[in-house]
Image (cartoon, rainbow, N blue to C red; front, side, top):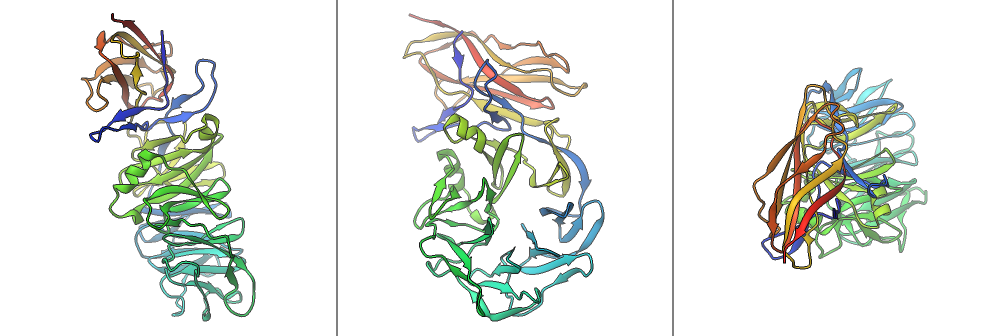
Length: 451
């Protein structure tokens, strides 16, 4: 039987383009299992842990303790509420030697065990769009200036110590720190600061290190793979996902993701984060209705950019003592590769194949088999899978369902017998919606050429 690749799904659109079809809720894994060079498996599910008092807005591990902002409350998970920080939307969390900093609702707060939650009320601070800790300073930005607090008093700010991003008049959209160096993303550039000390603003722009790409918002960036990644663009260019380099940026996004980014009316709602476990570094780009996930390890092994999409994806993952916590809405959960469910709800997975073309010769597709690892599901579940096909890349046939057994049905073969005529080329779609753990590595088709 001829084999059909799992990766590289394609489709067509109304603009007469062949476009990439990205798998949904299936994570590509680059592993040579001697059946194929890779597989699909379900991404980490989310086990319910604790219902919070409001929408989860960010979290951090500080000294082995998990702090999160949920609603307007700063919460130490497992202990209780530590105070109210107000605001809405994503927060910026960082820490120095003795205190946690929280930027929320354009205000700056500190928390430590001795003084509790304290707001910085110095009028010279101004609105706080983003904040971080570096070299003993808390650094913030109001979008126009860069502000540092006093070393001797982190609640005090002197207006003589304001700095700015000087190489481009674009507004500052955030702050980030990589290996102790501060990068200042603007809308169309990213500038690098160096600590030079002195009595004024203690940082200066490093000449020649400016990256000619900028970031759309404070939440649309994160540390990733020993640098930082961001959503943005150069001046006059469309949005993309980039990884910062030495004076430049490397594009990570695919054509399909660029289309998704272009369709967002307000790009400032985009959030980014990274998860690293099971020998894979993942970059998550949270869009309003879905999340795109970039796999660094799989991309390096495959020699191409590997992305997949997640629906109802957890956000703001925090690792504490070997356990990963994340949230959806106001529900905090534990990330686990032992389940495919999200807060006990089943997940729908789906993927399309590349175009199958028999050099223009019509064929009969007598059978098709999805080879993988069935039978991994809760004891009270029975899984079903669906197959459909398209001979134009846009419209699909009626789905054909098969049952693939219950828990322990590990020898069940996932086979369909469509007996259909394919006049020229076709793509095949596979889908499932249940609580099973999907795992597939190969597709084999039984085809008969027609003269």
